[in-house]
Image (cartoon, rainbow, N blue to C red):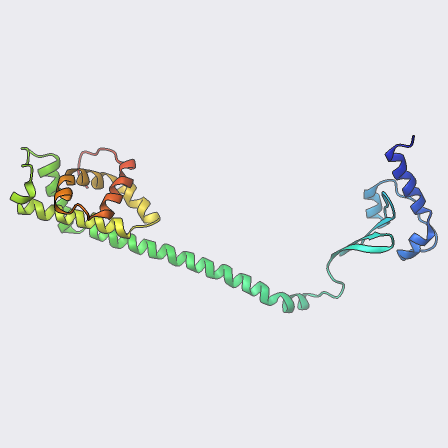
Amino acid sequence: MVSPVQRIWDAERRTYRNRDFWHSLGHSSRCPRRSTSLRPALVRQRPVSSRGLCGVQITAHRARVIFRGSPVLDIGWPADLTWYRLLTEWGGLIGGILALIAGAALALGAYYQLQTFKQFELLKILEARPVRKARHLLWHRLQQPKEEPPLHWWTDNDDLEEAASSVCASFDIVGIIARGRNWKFFTKEWAHPICWTYESLQEYIRMRNPNGYHGYRALYKAAKKHHHSAPTPN
């Protein structure tokens, strides 16, 4: 019984003895010496056969696979291809790709610039002097009071009511406008003032504006994950 390997070698031997096969590949009628491995055959640019009539031609810029005298695969640059032809025929496509990359880079830069500008404007709101004074007043009167404030303190103390309104409005604006990297920045870096003011003003918000301050509520829920107690207000 003949093994598969022996059948392959027999087929290869018959192929190399077939003069018509070499004429179809453009070689002389004299059959070249059979290569014993694939790699030396490719280096010497001689066809190699396996499992039937099959040839491989390797040149400097092209590779051709021939089966039964006809090329079935042709890989490489066209013979008449020059740099001028490449730039003229493919220049539009290459230029379009480069323009698309440049446009994406400009759009990304503009996005980050816009986010930085928004962050600066929101910081100006939170760091404004009246808002800072309002947070300071709420800290000393509600968060760490010398005496317990009345239950509905906003009805008896106009200063506290005005301070609570300013703080809620400022954080509500931040919660509505901040998105993306700005949202992460404020919920992490401003987690303490957001949390202690909201927790101190929960009853005030529920009584005065139960359906409002959605941005402030969302900001508080996100900042609570990063909240750590601090000794002084921000």
